[in-house]
Image (tube, rainbow, N blue to C red; front, side, top):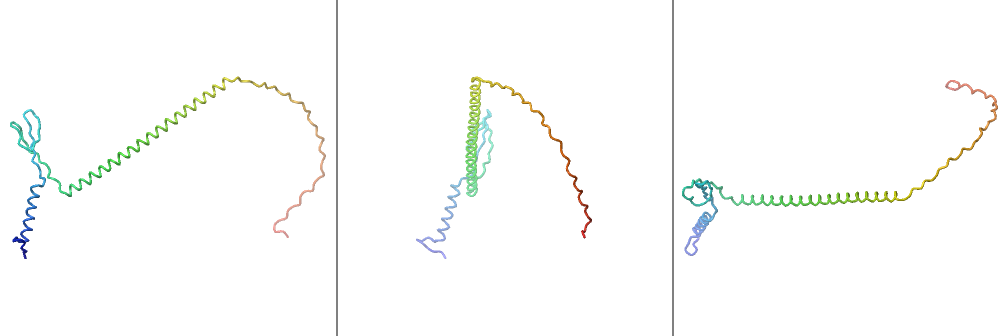
Length: 172
């Protein structure tokens, strides 16, 4: 059942609006652009969307059709992912470079401390050699003579009885 609004059927109005939108989308939608490759007499290559100049060799270059909205969204998400990965890579490289600089600074500091310790030791040794060395005389001590002491002869002890013989097991 068609409704009549201001003398126009409602379903007919809806159909005409849909048709107008379809025509507008077809007209304003980006389409594949025809590209011509023109090779001049001198070998110079020119790409144009118009006709080639006289004496040029013309060949048509097929361009891909425009991307759908889904393909554009997928491409955008991929590009955002690549940008994020590139930023993460750059941040990681910056961290590694800073760590490398800290390590090199630490190595230089250790080397400077080692050189300073060598200089301090050389200075200490030079001060030691500047001081006179006094030797202390060592006199040998004569050994005292001690005669061997003579022990009195040992007296013989009384004989001891031999131990009793053991009996076999079990004892009775």
